[in-house]
Every structure is written in C-alpha cells, then in structure tokens.
Length: 197
Image (cartoon, rainbow, N blue to C red; front, side, top):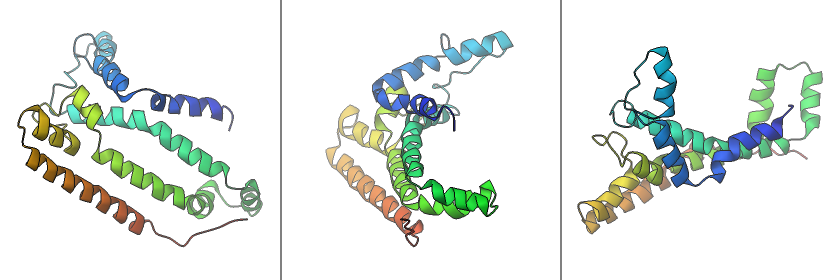
C-alpha cells in the first residue's frame, strides 16, 4: 500500500508522547470554554457540553483518548507481523481466485494468531490500568463516572482515605484480575499453531 510508512508514523506518534502530555493536551481540547471541540461546534450553533465535567460523557471522552494514545502500538505490532508473512502465499491464493474476505479469514488471521493473542493480553492490561490518564484528566470524576481500579487503589492509600490495608487488598485483587484476564485470553484464543517456511 502506498504511503504505509507515513500512515505508521502518524498512528505511532502518540506512543512517542508522554502520557502526562497527552492528558494535558486533551484536557485543553475538551475544555468547555476554550476547548477545540466546543470552538468547532460554536459556528454550527451548537453549545458543546462540559465534556469532562458531565458524568454521561466523561468516561467516553477518556476512553477515546486511551484508544487514540494506544492504537499506534497495535498498528506497528500487526504491521510487523503482516510483513513477516511471505508474499508467495498471497500470490498463490490470488491465483486460486480467493476474495479478499476469504484471504483475510483463511490466511491472514490464522498466520497472525500469535500476534492476536499478544494484542489481547496487552489490551486487557491497558484497559484495567489507565491510571495516569484518568487521574490527570478527571481524577475519576465526576461522581466516579471515569474511575478505574488503579486510581481507586491510589486514592484509598494516599489521597483522601489513607487506608493502606484496604489499598493493598485492591492491589491484590487487581493483580489476580489481570492474571485471570490474561489466562482467559490465552485459553479463549488457543488454536493449533500454523507454521510456514
């Protein structure tokens, strides 16, 4: 595909940035008065909400930033895995008259299955974490609508409650939850290994 390197660079760019910078920049983008989104909506006659101050939108705004910040990793991961598949296989399938959908389902996905397993585990761990981004953007608010386990553990131990034993229990639960998700992802995605030479 033409321009693949440029696309990869654009998608991977957020991975180069610090999570703190990403959080601060997107806080400004979502700002209710001087933010980029509400400034773009104003000429259309739409009064944008307080994106991070409304319990209905805060979680989705933080989730959108997490996706934007992490998608580059998966683009590079799957791009590298796809480049490792020999072109001869695709040429043979093309000569046999297989459609793109059949090629994706029968050739590409089975050959990328190890990468899919790794991606699921990284995704599960990232979904359970998100501590820094959530703390800097919303601190779990409003009304705990964007709270995550890591932030709850931190706030329990250090911020307001100073209950170190309770925070330790949350940490242990988080560890076993992450471990369980990783094991379930590996078992659910277990397949016979396909090798090519």
